[in-house]
Image (cartoon, rainbow, N blue to C red; front, side, top):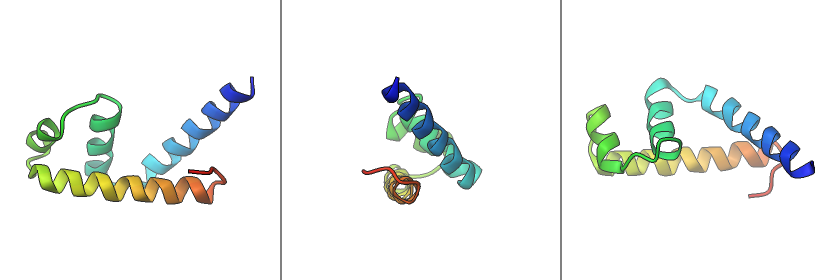
Amino acid sequence: FYELDYARTSSEEIDKFLDTLDRENRVIFVRRYWYADSISDIAERVSMSSHNITARLYRIRENLKKHLKKAGYSI
């Protein structure tokens, strides 16, 4: 039960974090980590270079780590 509760709470925190992102960054993050789109597919979808997508994903992940640590999760 504890694991399920922890998973639900952490997914709620991720949802809160996603709400802080602008639409473009949210689309990039969700396409990569929910739909498992390739970097090149995402780049084509949002008309950016693959390098730009990679850099954005890195910054988004770093901000997500900070958000989760602030919420009390150990990363």
